[in-house]
Length: 393
Image (cartoon, rainbow, N blue to C red; front, side, top):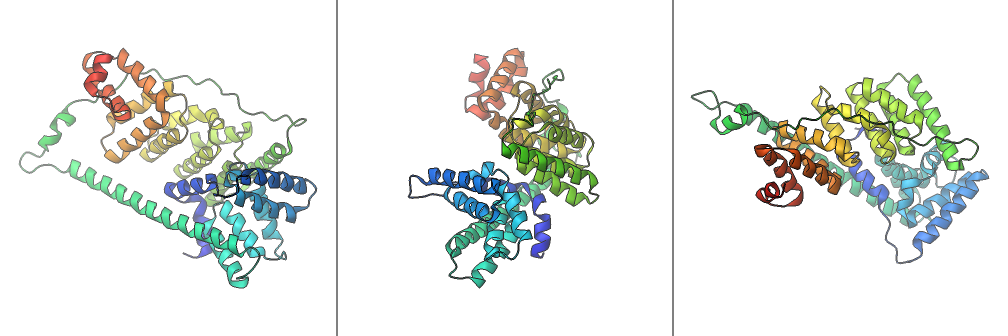
């Protein structure tokens, strides 16, 4: 695959890849200077000041200096990444343009393009003023790609193992046409908690006040409006999904964003729902809670891929435990395949004490033998003995 093809496909990379991208965006560069974070903040303030006076080149240069002192700045970049990419793509006459394009593509998670640009810079300017930074970024870039590919290979192996497990479970034993080891499981019904469908109150989300918003919020809202318009005009599905990813990167739960996401989760194709959930995960808590009802409905989606992608989102953004955990418990009880049961366990763990408290209330409300399945899940989460959990309930 060419670098251009890889770049086009990158926003839709596997979950494993995005996990590595998330890690690098939150990583802080170690520094011997105890004042590194303070200096980074000052550089960022100066960059925003320069940007407000349209001194774009210096602003985007200062932003790189700030980020290389403190990577946590990338979790709230005030639009510098997208704007910096656009600026350097449109101003190819700037000196050492390859370095700036390489750095900004790296910060945006566009690693194939970052590798290409940084390699070009080091070839043309092996002793350039940014050569040390470029080498460090290039090494990080390649490490991330290598780690991600290893994670993707492990993910593929796990899926293959799950398919083998399914095939073995479905294969009858010669003689009577059934597998006696599964007889008890197949003949009995799993315990499922009777739950009323929860009602979700509308969540109050950020409503901008045009008269008093800070500059970064005003700029973010303008970007979002433009991207939503682009999405509505675009006909190519891959490009539409890329636009959703860019909306998520802005990390602002404006009402118009959440309304769009809600509509797409309800009516979009499988690929569109996946892209929407990736964008929603990027926005994160507490903003994503505006779409909690839509996400809950996806747990009952007729396509298993969608329902378990929704489970994954709740694992990343544990919301409203009292409404979600009982539903997850029912999914766990009816699920036969280990790989999906493990995903549900990871999601229970993401809820932490809140999830355990809900399960504890469930076991107290359950009667007789119905307590055991709940106790088994609590045991997985806490390490307590199942019998002890039952006796204490």
